[in-house]
Amino acid sequence: MTFQCLDKGFVIWLTGLPGSGKTTLANNVARILKRNNYRVEVIDGDWARKTISLGAGYTREERRIHLHRVAWVARLLARNGVVVICSFVSPYRDVRKMIRDIIEEEVPFIEVYVKCPLEECIRRDPKGLYKKALRGEIPNFTGISDPYEPPENPEVIVDTLNNSVEENVETIIKYIKNRFNLEIR
Image (cartoon, rainbow, N blue to C red; front, side):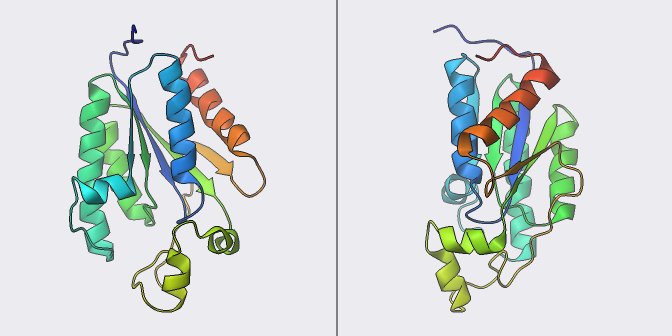
């Protein structure tokens, strides 16, 4: 297989409430890019907390430190021609600004807001975390006992309540295709 070689990659950062569909979208975008022979890495919260941020907690400061590490890993990969797709709740605007600042020193950063109402995320509850948080068993849980601050000016907004996975993936692909003049079928 011959890879499409990008001099520099870029970072797509999906942010939204737990259960909004970030990882599903990240994996589907990655699949399409890989099918088109781009070098792609998906970094999601579960993987990062088991590897580069082992033991990271969920307080505001612990999240900031955790996401600082992830931003540097994403930057290093992207500056070496990899398209990096990050899927993190990343609930605070100031921390997302820090992430953007770290990454944009060397490579483009695309913030994707994965919009989904809290009620729908609670209904989906793919990992059963909302149930636990609502019972008070999980402290600092985004959307329940800790805030989520929606992005004010994301490059892309996808709506996982009103649009299908395929429609949302197409929105993201269309954006990066146009912005970077990529050949994607």
